[in-house]
Image 1 (cartoon, rainbow, N blue to C red):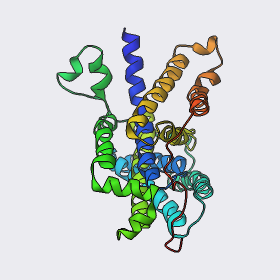
Image 2: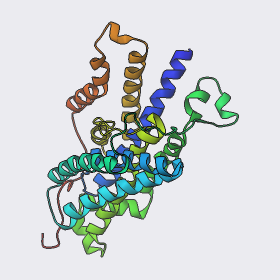
Image 3: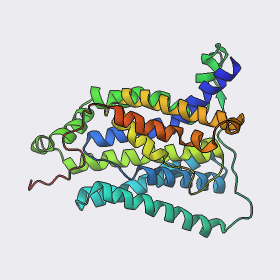
Length: 307
């Protein structure tokens, strides 16, 4: 039982950045913006979070720096794709490559090439009084760090935003029928830019989870494609926060199992690379097996009044 509780707890923890990223992607793609720069945004957030925490000693400042870093990457992507009308996939891919170079360069400018990895203290677990004592559910849900607790509020808030507010209706309409939104006197590109910036801030916080909330260090390969997994979860969840939650839990559990198997010596029976690849294998299987997608009608299409 202890092993199961530990595995479920780790699964929920590892779901945190994927859920932040996938919900950010859902909101942006509902407006028609396919934020393919999400991998780079994650990495920028991880770097900004580490640097902010390392230099100030404050995890809060680190997380804010991560959000600002993600925001900066998203702003570049938004300006190029929305206002300069460039291809969203090509631009996102370029920013992903650029982010890796930028992080490597400034990491060396600030810290040189240290002989030992620079470390910070990861976010501590916070046990919620009374609730954390509940058998099984207590340790799993109520002994997590602050970023995981923030996700608990993000899930209903994102659903309420998209489906219960006028802003959510505007966002969804922008992705389905931007001409109608324009006729109503609302700036389509302004709405899209807002959702991209919001996705950048959330993606930056997701990246900070890996450097500030989990590992307590930064390396340029620490994201390891997890931004793309969050991107895939948006598709597999059918552009709905509820679907994103379901998909994220599955991927988080898979990653937790992979980490557990490596820690207990599962590599004695199977190659460690198999466990590392499990989340990515699952991404491919679920994507191929999905029969239909409720894709926003104008996803990935630039909007101009002349059209």
